[in-house]
Length: 436
Ligand code: HEM
Ligand code: HEM
Ligand code: SF4
Ligand code: SF4
Image (cartoon, rainbow, N blue to C red; front, top):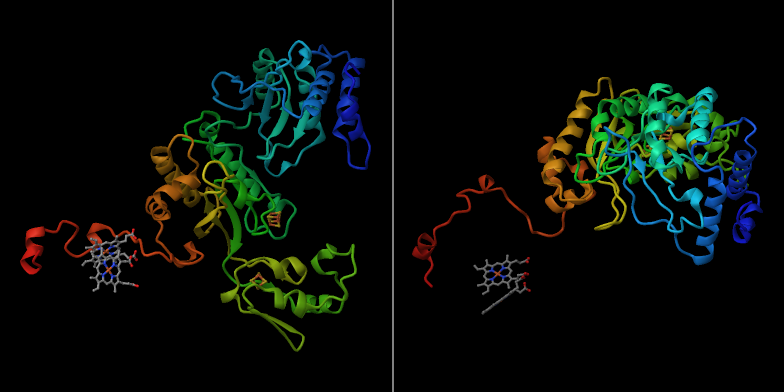
């Protein structure tokens, strides 16, 4: 290797797959170049990355310069520019831009497709990736500015593949695997994710918003893509009718024929499955009963938390009248504190072409794009102008499900037309009855 990396070398031990070993392996592959690739960026890019990382370990600080604005013509985002602050020491990573590649919904791949991506990235980039970025994109880590358009041309013309989002725009939507592999899926998360990604390509590629905006799609309240915490607009599947219940299968759980939670806790002895203790008593609303070998659910009181279904997936199933809830406003702490999504639409059908869902999205955008301050997330606009304003712009009637609890302070705003006589009183009229 080009640089000594004593600190990083320590991370090659231990059982977890070592990113250091992998980077060294890629460095070696590039150096040997058995396929005779005509590398378009420095051959030793991986070695210089290890070098600058070692320096950062030593200094306990980053060695990337501030910012970086690069991209492709026609788009306002998708590439995150980055330059090393020690370019003489590490010329291989003097330019080290990241490209975001839009991933397929659910992240299902064929090896043929991945091989094509790898060939392109070996040729015009570092060969280093992140599978995947937290938002969902395939991340290509490290290339030079002149390669960006070349890569983009090849991606679009040969691989029929677009970039992902970055900047003050709609970021790359992502979803749980949903109906492809999960019997809890209340709607086709992949189809909705894919459809909206295509429908809102313009909003994704050309920043037009006050700040970033993310969509995520969870098939049920288990939230495997964490939409409630990581997307400004979170779509979470649910059902409206009764949980489907198979008493014969319930008996099989009670009799020990099936492991609870599909065997998720088999690594430890938790004793024999106790339906009363592990299901009925843990139901958050206490709406279940197990008597005389029969399980009963009072579905009116069920909040669809998924617990009982998660414990006995072979006996209990989601209802047949399915749709999703829309929650809004999740964000990380900066500026005014972390937020999770707040319930806006308790239930909407998720059927193509998703007209009702798009109406909500576009009403929210119309409001936020006009009223949002510079770099103000939707969640912060909701705090600043009020949830009531959000309900007005989306034309949604306030309902008890919109709150966890009613307000306790009495600083209540009334609209003038709700108040008899309005807000324009005459002091002289008042004085007629009340002397100074
Ligand atoms: C008919 C006459 C008045 C009525 C009905 C009235 C009523 C109220 C009410 C309902 C509040 C709010 C209580 C709360 O925070 O829960 C309040 C607060 C207050 N009122 Fe009055 N008030 C009257 C006259 C006055 C006058 C003449 C003064 C002062 C000269 C005054 C000074 C204040 C102050 C300083 C507060 C507290 C404000 C705050 O907490 O920030 N009020 N009043
Ligand atoms: C300049 C004269 C006065 C001022 C500025 C004044 C101001 C206030 C304020 C700010 C409050 C608290 C309101 C709130 O709950 O937010 C209050 C409460 C009260 N004031 Fe006065 N006040 C005055 C005179 C009087 C007088 C003369 C009386 C009775 C003779 C009186 C009886 C009360 C009572 C009973 C309360 C309610 C206390 C409570 O809720 O625990 N105040 N006053
Ligand atoms: S969120 Fe629900 S539907 Fe989606 S993968 Fe997880 S458990 Fe299945
Ligand atoms: S889904 Fe949750 S709230 Fe509903 S019956 Fe099961 S445990 Fe109770």
